[in-house]
Length: 578
Image (cartoon, rainbow, N blue to C red; front, side, top):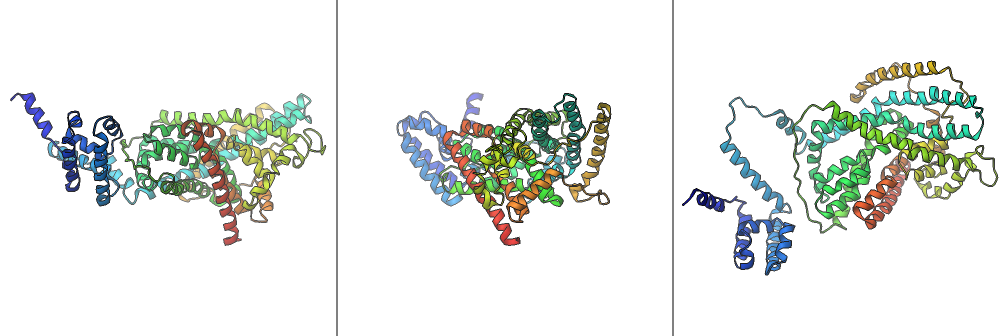
């Protein structure tokens, strides 16, 4: 016998022991295959039997085109149902586990390691962060630290940008308008109350996004994000998905649009649809400015925890809704197994982290100068046009503007939620364009003197010097803020930051519309922003990936769920603590 024939015989005689129950069904299927000559001639018998037990779709399609193929699939299905009744639903996982167990035994019996060889740091660390019981709590602790970082540590830079816009930049704009003789014209109102108030109200949150993306980039580049998907696999399994479906949701923390597109990595169509329906509940970066603003207004001492709670609520909502859909609409969806490579831990690459931040913050800034600026101009126009002759153009009271009149029609729907005023309803409607616009809309609606329009410029060089000086102060304060992550406050002897005019105006408005329960109304508003439709671009991406039918199901469902959850928060808060 030749060497080739000997090797071939050994290959044909090789087999993995899958356990008593599985082997019994494999052997029965092998006998069934042997009784079907057309099929038996085309496939190795044992290999085909295992593929049938794994419910391999490609093999099933090929068999359906052959004589007796359909009957063989029915026989295999009976074996699958019998095995699931004995061993549970994770049949494909058990088959894979037997294979990897055999590989592990082979490696241990053939690979010789040096006597002083120690397990790699990655293996030792993974025993902790991917632990069956500790993995998920560790993951949420890491996420809590991330959002404490974004809320607390970025605060000095938020104050710096706000001071720059309302101070030096505002003063220079006013000086230019004075020079051109446009100080009291509608042009001045457009720039001051429209563009600068709208765009500037959003730009103050650039530090928040920068710190958020910095933290996520570091976690991703070190290799921890893959572990996050792995430990979440057990949770996702409860809703019929797997850890791989959590990856689009992680992407959704940055932006919902690429999160929809990343569902393409899921092979199963029902996996893609179910994941796509849950992705919008992951808080994108555009929602973060709303959380930061409202947390600072209504929960100043616990802003970081309030922001984290929104992200956590989004995850829990997705899990709860997924369980409901799994038991109803997707009741017959087959379970998929997670196969993911866990890369070794490594120090984050500075260039990679920088490009990650640059791309995402750049997108935010691009929106600020396109979508948000265009929306701010249109919104200024709607606020400048009076209704029933009450005032003149650009000088009308905002309460009597076209924008206010239109949104008063919607406001009563939101009254049970605690924010039934036209300002809140108008902000939510414009927020459909982009969630950052919620903040810019409020900055324009509330007459809060976003710019100190009576101030005079102190000269270009002096204004630039003030910007640089205050930036250095913000940097020092940011370094002092780092211990806040672990609860150490280095600002104990310093005066607390005073709320801005905008913050005071929003608080007063929500407190009045809720009958003195402004805190619950503010929290309900944050929940509504979390749950309702992310933005018009995300809707377009959803339609492209899931189809028109599921797009409408998702949009309507999000609006209804947002109303119900916000109602529960506000009314529940009044009932328990009012």
